[in-house]
Length: 316
Image (cartoon, rainbow, N blue to C red):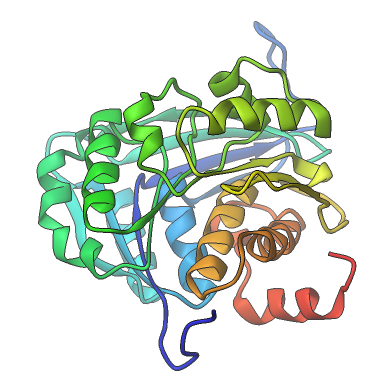
């Protein structure tokens, strides 16, 4: 059942804040090779911040729990979060470490590779999570990633679970996860690479995605959604129902941040009371809009853009 439309859903995002430094080139270099790139772009990013911004632009009341450095990048990030009406009471400042930075290369097909210097993100602690207990208690959904210490993630997942919250984890970057943590998740949202890390199965098509999703779900998580880029997303829910939901076809310019938009969109639509499958469809549309634009946060769409496409395309 859908929530009262007069009430904005409440989502707590716990995760990273970075500044992205992006270079576009004709192709990605191989190890040991230097190539000349084209356009350079510097913009705010971080998986946690991207997902928080996506949730806010898609209509949720968002609280962000994160840590930034006492530097220009941190100051600029805070200005953006506040301008997007994100609650920043639990964005802490680390006076010893710089703000996180990501170096991103993008080729002409929109594919990318990313290297992150975590900086202040690695000092987000369990004590910081405790300070946000009240806002976690009031949340409809708690959304996390893995660009902060795994100990902090595990503690936040346990706290939210004990408070009766639905917890969604985007396990990026890929890491091995303890079964206790998996047991406390409502849903996990890996991409192909992360799904392979969690399952031991190389994900290349619907069949391999189904096998991988089954292995991941047997570790205790209720619902598994594997994002598969242009192919869409594979869903295996807690009732053993499986579906491959195709992506909305759009020209791809830059895939940076598309997965974060997917995570944010799914969380918002799910929190509004929609089914898991419909929420994945909505998230597919949101991600398809994001890949038509350059940058992470600069590519995040607003709700009216998604509603317009979602409502007009009965094939999605």
